[in-house]
Image (cartoon, rainbow, N blue to C red; front, side, top):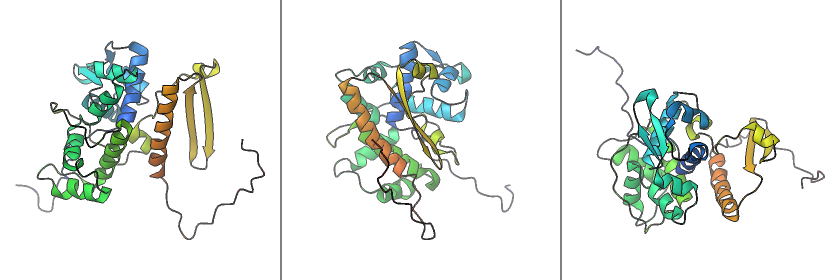
Amino acid sequence: MAEAGKAKKRARSPNYPFVDLQVAVGHTEALYSHDRRHPVPILIAHERWGYKRGSAAGNQCTAALKSYGLIRVEGRGDDRKLSVTEAGERIVRHAPDRPQRLRDAALSPPIHSELWSKYREAGLPSDDVVKNYLVWEREQNRFNEDVVDGVICRFRDTIAFANVQNTDTIEEDEGLSYGEEKQGNGILEVLGPLVPSVKKQAVVEGMIKQDIFALDEGQIVIQWPTILSEASFDDVKDWLKILQRKIGRCVRPRSASEPMPEVDSGDDDNA
């Protein structure tokens, strides 16, 4: 008999991708750039993605990449090995069918295909409507309110990144498991590195350019190759638009008691 007054265990949310598709493609590129499609030990993959070896975040990212169809996973536990799939290779190498491959990947996770099937005909409604469906209206496996905002955010970012249109259909795929988001994660752990990490030596040798912008809350660091194709530059511009929306969600509204910022006189040369 259960103890009287014992707290009811919180129901676990259904499976959902830990990172959006753009981050997942960046992680896939990090694997492919080092080892092409050869199997990579999972602990090495975690390090390349900027996570601690064997961390929950690293394992959740692994499950997310698998759910998008970008990698194949073999083995169990820390003995698992990851290899880039054909779809993953064609995406990171910008094959002619990359746009369609991205759309297929975006709709591969079951929760993404469910939401797209439900809303694609009339277009996606507001976040409040989607949230109400996920938390209250699903017949089973409803989402917890403490994670549902992140689920919706990553779904929208994924659909936008892949340029999914309401004419796109969904191919059925076998169920795949993801990691549940841990409560209290910081934004860097939730989203993962936005671009594959680059060795400092590459910056010194001139292969990579880097710019650091200092803020009161910390630094924003951006690195990019010294030579880019026009197609890659167009991808960067699209990524910056998505990044602007992501960063905007982190902005805390100014309270009435806070002083107004100083107005830039325009005397400084910011060219």
